[in-house]
Image (tube, rainbow, N blue to C red):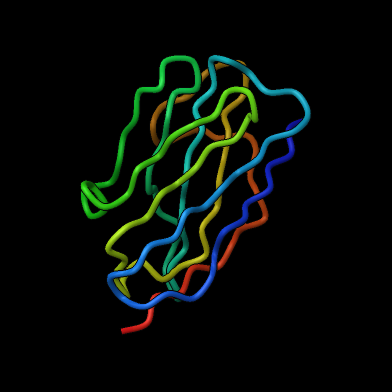
Length: 123
């Protein structure tokens, strides 16, 4: 089993920055995707960004390209989401996710999920 714990959420003004962290424990896999999703108020969960752990290749939803950066620290088994120039539309609960040993795609399936961390961007 893989446990994922997000941290770094909070309240920030529009134009500000936050860095989210997702620390993994338990059994993880070099071949896995590590992703960030979010659930805005009143909306369904949506894909934000993902990284292939072994290669570092990344993918982003169009609305965050140029503003968000996903990265990883192999030694810490941690993935980060650096969020710059935040907009009120970015307000959501952010979840990190990890795929299992059978692989995935940028958008899933993801087998493991964190508890979520709230990001609120004020205008």
